[in-house]
Length: 184
Image (tube, rainbow, N blue to C red; front, side, top):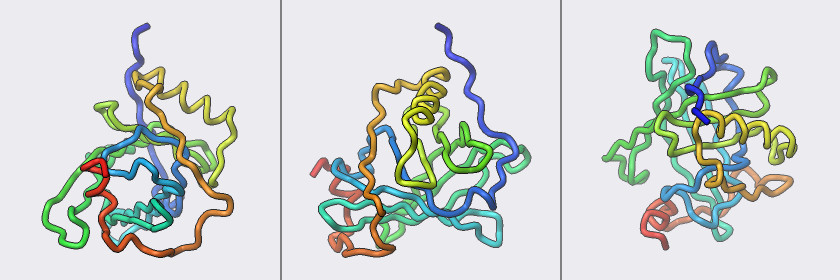
């Protein structure tokens, strides 16, 4: 079966998109701990139109996080194609790491979303709640499959209900992303 051309959301209402999103499933990445739970992203609109990004995950009972910013990849289009930039290591921001963040689908109430990349190497299913109905989850998986994602790589992210408090003991070795890169 020929894969469909990947479409992205047009006319995304950035203000409605801001706030907290819980990771329901993703393609595992070397940048995240293999035992990460309660992974979430919080977005806040900056005055200059960029977006502050806070990604958090808990591993071994400790909260690891990284902050970055997102901006439109092509400012002159209404396509929801963004670039996300993080600096690593986070405590000594010297090396910018930039990735694609394409909103492939969002429901009309802005409650769940499918996020990917042109390379099809990363995929996320996000939700405003810690749980997404199986029927909706399966629809999002099917949408990803139809545009050429290998959905067999999707890994569901364990989420607590209720989610952890705003803060928690931090991973003072800061270093969840270093540990994950080296597979520790």
